[in-house]
Length: 309
Image (cartoon, rainbow, N blue to C red; front, side, top):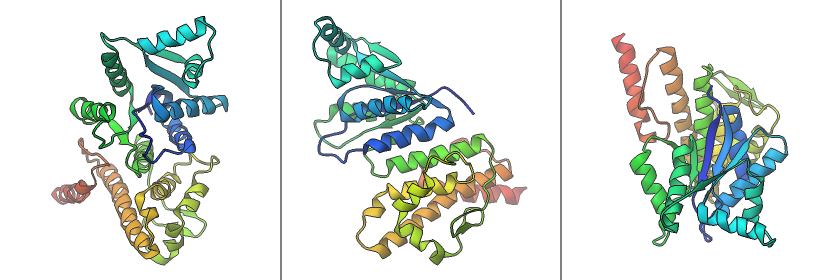
C-alpha cells in the first residue's frame, strides 16, 4: 500500500447550497488515513475549505497522524504578514495559516491568475480530490475547477461533493481500493442478524429493517473501534453510502426500500467484478467503479473470458 498520499479539498460551498456537516470532514479525513493518506491540502477560501482546514487541525490535535498543507496566493500571504506586523486582530484564516504544517505560496502576474494557479496546484498535487461544482451562472471558480479536471485530469480520483451522495461513492471506492491493494478475499461475515454469503443477501426480509434505518446502522458500523477491520469494510461503507444518498430523503418507506435495494445490488456488482477478476487473473485497465452503466458490459467480458479458457 502506498503511503504519503495527499487528500485535496478545493472549491466554494455556495451560501444557499446544502452545507457539508462539520463531522463529515472528519469522517472523510479519518477514513482515508488507513489507506495511506497522510496530508490534507486545501486553500482557505470560503466555508468549505475553511471547514476542511479546521477539521484537519482538530484531528491532528486529537492525535491523528495527519498534516495540513495550505495553498494561498502571495497577495493573501502578504495581508497576513501585514496583520502580524501591525499587531492587528487575526482572522480565522490567519490563525489557520499559523497552525498549518506547511504554507505553499502561489504567485501570479495578476490576482486572478494567482487564484487560478492556486486551484490548479491543489488539483495537480492531490491523489484523491474532493471539490464542489455548481450550475450557478456566476460561479466562475467552481466552473474553472470542473473544466480543468475534465481537460487535464480525466482519470483522477475525484469526488464532486455538490452531489448529495458524493461522499458515499468515495467511501465506497476507498474501501474497494483497500481490498484490492491488500489482496483481501471477499468473505462472508455477520453483524447482529445480518448474514451475507460472499456479501450477497438472499434473505430480503432479514435486511429490510437495516435499510429503513441506514443512518443508525451506519453509526454502528462507523464506530472507531474496529474501523480498519477489512472484513467489515464492504458492509460498513455501503450503509455509509446509503445514509448519505438522496434516496434516504424519500417520503415513502416502500419506495426507499425498493431503490435502496437496487443500490445494494449495484454495490454487489462491484464486489463480483473484483472477486472474479482476482480469481481468474483478469486485468481491466480502464475499470472505474464510478462508471455504473458499464458494470453489465464488464461482467459479460469476464464471463466471455472464462468461456475462452
